Length: 159
Ligand code: HEC
Image 1 (cartoon, rainbow, N blue to C red):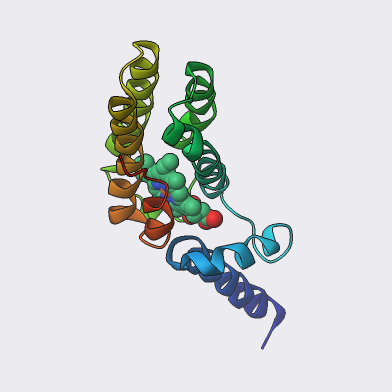
Image 2 (tube, rainbow, N blue to C red):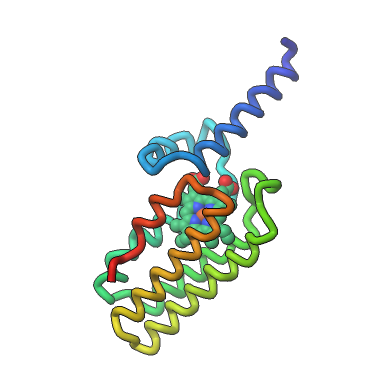
């Protein structure tokens, strides 16, 4: 096997690994998969943003439940998560035309959540807005990336 072909095959292998690891890995494997971040394969911009999004929402879940989420916290999410709309994905050909709509729906739901806190809506109404935002994550994932769905569903709070 010549070196070019070997390099090509290695590239192909790492690329398929990135896809499998990012979108199909069940939640239990996700901890393990963060280890190769520096070496084994290069996570895409979108994958890195998504990891932050998942961590942010998991961190804020308890506050959403207590009803202590602040306008500033939601604005910080809106600020950092919005790059999702333009971040480069692992495999552009897997991105469907519906992606832009789901991305907008997610950011709109964060705005709705922000407004709900600002209006000092009841805890239940604020939870509905929080869960609706998580619902848009799930909707996009059903079409684009089913692997993390069970992890994302766990972020929802029972009213
Ligand atoms: C508009 C569609 C869309 C929305 C909305 C969305 N995702 Fe994603 N998500 C994707 C796509 C596409 C990927 C695959 C990214 C890649 O491999 O480049 C992904 C990847 C992920 C991953 C795996 C990242 C990795 O390590 O490879 C996690 C976890 C994740 N998303 C969580 C979330 C959470 C939590 C939300 C909501 C707070 C969310 N996503 C909202 C489309 C979306």
